[in-house]
Length: 428
Image (cartoon, rainbow, N blue to C red):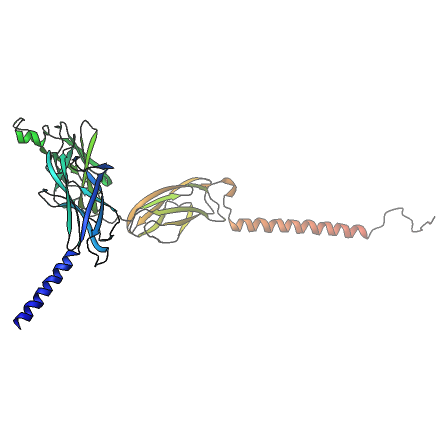
C-alpha cells in the first residue's frame, strides 16, 4: 500500500514538472523613448517629466504539447527608489502568440519631489502567472533649470469666512530647480469677488544642493512663505469660491499656479421694503366747469415687498372739486400702476392759475407730495344756470312778439284794395 502511494506521489510530481516545463519564455526587444533606443544608454530626464516608453516583446513556447497562445500576459515599467510611493505603469492583459512581436506603450510620471541628481534603475518586465522576464536600464534624474513649486496653500480662517471680514492666505513655495530665485512674486485673489493681493518672498530661494552643501547665508532657504490679506466684500453672496494663487519667478518668464476652495457666509440682507417711483403725466392742465380733467399719477414699486398707496388732494376746495380713483393702489415688488386725480372747476371760479397738492401716502406716512397747477381760462368761466334760462326765455318772448307783428301786418294788407284800381279786367 505504501509503495502504491509513493508511486502516485511520484507520478504527481512528474506531472507538475512537465506542466512547468511547457511555460512560455518571454523576450524583450528594443525599448524606445521618443524614438530613441535606450538599450545600452543612460536615459537623462527631469523630475516632473512624463516618460512615454515603447517596448517590443514576444513570447516563445519550448513545448509542442501545449497551445502556442498565451492569454494572460502583461508588461510593466517600474522605477524603484521613490520614498513616497511607487512609480510604475502596467498594461492590460493581452494574448501573446508564438512568433508575433508586440509593441506596448507605457507612461511613467516622475514626481516633482523625486530626489534629483541621482541614478535610478528602470525595469521593464514581461510576465504571466508563472514566468517573468526583466530588462533593466540606467536612468539619471535631474532637476529643471528653473522650477518653483507651490508646496501648500493654507488660509485663516481655515474653511469659511464671513462677508466683510479679512481672509489671510499663506503660500509656501519651494525651489526645486538648479538655479536660485530672487524676487519671487506671489499673487492671491478671488476673481468672482474682484479682490486680489500681491507679495514677495523675503529672501532668495536657494537650491536643494546649495542647502545640502550649506553654501548660503544663514537666513536663506530653499523654501519660503508669503502671507497675503484679502478683504471679503461686505455684499459678497453666500457660496463657495476659489482662491487662485499665481507664483511668478525667473524674472516673470515662468509661473506656478494653485487654488484653494473657501466658503463665504454672506451678510444677512434685509428684505428691501416697498419703494415707489412716482411720476405725473403733466403737472399743469386747463380746467372747465363742464367736465373733469384727469391728472395721471404713475407708480413703479422698485422694492421687494408689496406696497399699499393712497392719494389725498389738498388746496383745491376754494376754486374746484377733486376725486381720486382708485382709492387705494396695491403694488407688488417690481410692478407698476396708476392713480387718477379728477379735478373740475367750480361754476363761480374766477379765471386764473391755481396751485394744489397731490399727497401720496403709504399707510399714514407721506411718501411724496406732488405740486400741481390748474388753469381756468376766461372762455370757460362758469355762468349761473338760472341766468342762462332767463336770457333764453326773454329771447324767445321777443322772437314770438316779432313773429306776431309780422303775421298781423301781412293779414291786414291782404284785405284792402289799392286806390284807383278798376274791377274790370282787360284781356289781350
